[in-house]
Figure 1 (tube, rainbow, N blue to C red):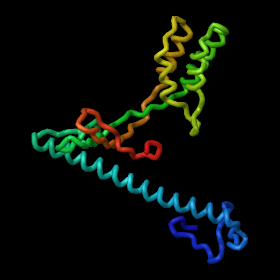
Figure 2 (cartoon, one colour):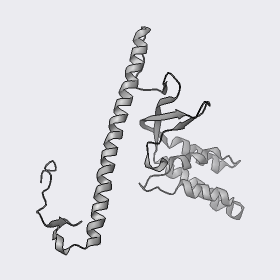
Figure 3 (tube, one colour):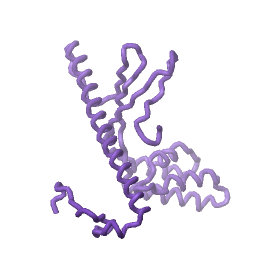
Figure 4 (cartoon, one colour):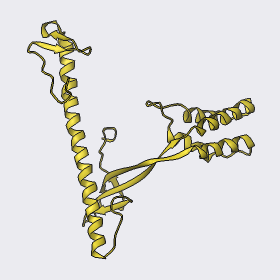
Length: 208
């Protein structure tokens, strides 16, 4: 079936999760109500996602143009697409910030680091710090996507022990860090009253 052609469901039927057509008369009212709520919310969410995508594209384009114009004014060639830049309104009420973050991934050397770290705790036994054990367990517990939590793993590098095996583990951990591209963010801030502080304008569901 061509994915670009919308599927037409015959009148009087509903398609279930297995792809079967079921007469509406055989579908419970609660199932119909649940379907209506989920479909309505999903449709709204897709529209909002498309609006956010369009906003980010426009914001990055406008900021790049602003940087380009500034460069041309002074006869300089600027990067334009990358770099952290803040753009404020003339009255200082609003600030648009473009941030570029380096993404990292962990190579197979992470397994060596993990083995060394676990070896330390096995050797230390009862003398090991329970708080430290919690940090290690959190660092090596995979997230929903099955990937390690970067921030939790990097937190281990801040811990120093005068122990040869631990130092070797930290070196293996450092060696396992590899660049994995960059991510560009657009954040919007609003000044709080007449203060020097700004509050972020929420652009994600968790923050509103």
